Image (tube, rainbow, N blue to C red):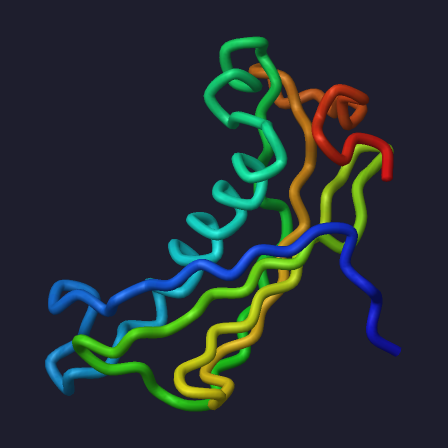
Length: 134
């Protein structure tokens, strides 16, 4: 069963040369970076700011990361990273990701973020996040 997203964003990304391995394929470690970029833009698109959260002492730590690689992306490809917010609260936020190029699924993934303070203690997802407590 697929969960309907609370919020979504599509982030276009042009593959840079530095992101590729010697075979000209995007290195597997790049996709989690793209996931984070899309997650950050999703929060920004809803009026939130990671910077403001961190200044207030709230951190979002990745406690689970999954990625399934289906097809390679290559240098100069234009891909789209779709980030879906699936759930939020009481102390965790879950996202799903799909990286596509011209309709072809390249990578799918998921993350779970935990809200913590600077000492690493769990905190509730703040109600003032654009989707807090969803």
